Image (cartoon, rainbow, N blue to C red):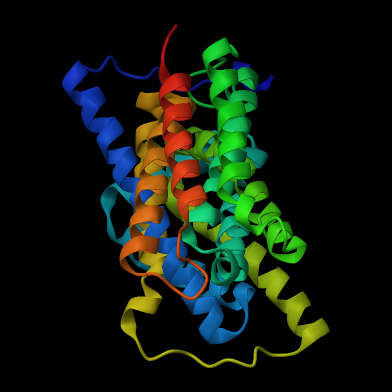
Length: 321
């Protein structure tokens, strides 16, 4: 059975009001990602280790899900349905690996936010995500099947890359800092694939929390292996656990976003979900850098213009013609 032949439930027909509500929720999810980026970035600075911050964030999210899923009837049914789908071949094992991409993105948050700032980090993620969404839709990895690469989508992706160059233009004199943008760029590439396969898992389990649990189990295992290698090479992190409770909210925010994305992707499709999430990320990132700036996150004119150009690119890519 090929990827496009994998059976999933057909997305229901939504009224205009419900579709608008779905896009609004996805945009709110994007704001959560920007907020999570700031929290995990600060946690990485406090721990003096971005990977350790990612392990802590993912681990806390996993603990929440390990309590919620078995405690709910829908979660228990979802685990049974997921096992049956894997045995029957309706869901392939590799389609359960979306958490690897999530782990990489969270690790990138902890490693780069302190140097890049939330706005530049987010624009880099957006560039990778918009480009990857074209390939994911073309390959039919998501629950909605194959989607053509239209001129509008292609123009939107190109404009988004130009937005990244504009946003980091004032940092071209610092190759080390600019090179850090490649990490969130790669993280963005994996987001579209993650959303697509998480949607497949959600459809197979018929439960959003179950799909979110699978994502966090895989992501946490990936980060633990990475952290073990890092400790063996570099030693234990030199920082300490912070006392501020808000620095531990990255995990719960991640649970909320992954659950929201897994629930919405079967209605919106990968592209529309990604576009709405991108809009929320850009809005949230620039607002955070303006209202709560750090030493590295004071957005200049180029950063703001890059964010605006990203929104324009999203609108162009969303247009049907």
